[in-house]
Length: 281
Image (cartoon, rainbow, N blue to C red; front, side):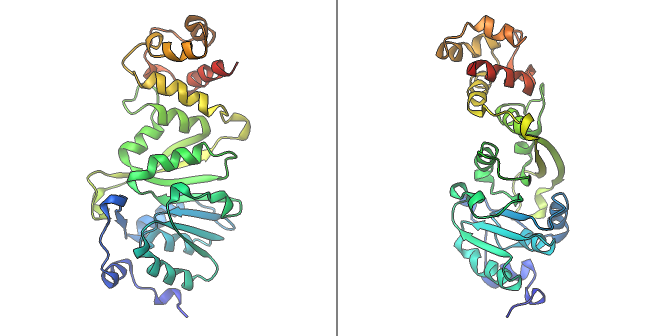
């Protein structure tokens, strides 16, 4: 029988198992419990909540989540080396930590946890955007909040507004589904090994059901066309999609009260939503 007090510190776990980060999997470990506890703080309240954690590694954030009285934590880990120390944590917290060895991109979290569900994770850098896009477009939207760590440049792309250099497809998608805000930055030196860039924790709170944009496939087409040629005016960048849908480009833009001579970075999220609606009419 393992108790919580029997668990070694994170540095001890790394020494015991001789772990080194796998660059191919985008691994950078966070051992400072003050920081992992702070991440969890932004997700409270957690009583009675099921949590999905992606890429727990040796279990630093996992321990903070379990100490926060979550109902259950589903830890999805692709690197089988970390299963033994995660198994020790599971035995120290009976019936509260569920381990899944596999690729998080292929896991349907909604079928493995009961609502309410939150996603809290230090995401592997190499799949962070792919994972986020999948969760944003999930039907139905199964999670009630996400507190996620990204490379700072990716976090900026999610929370950017019109006119920002980071503003693009990801911001429009995320902000059509959620209220997105940056919580705090974490310097590269806090990780082992240190990445080349700083990281940022962001909080995503889904908009009320009636306010969420539903035609995300059409929104994706519009933003791909617009931001794929972001230095061109809309009358040029949206020409191909207007032809595809047999729309008069000038009428389509005028109906949404958008100047065809502007560039896409000057449009707000609502403008893009109106354009996408025009494809569905």
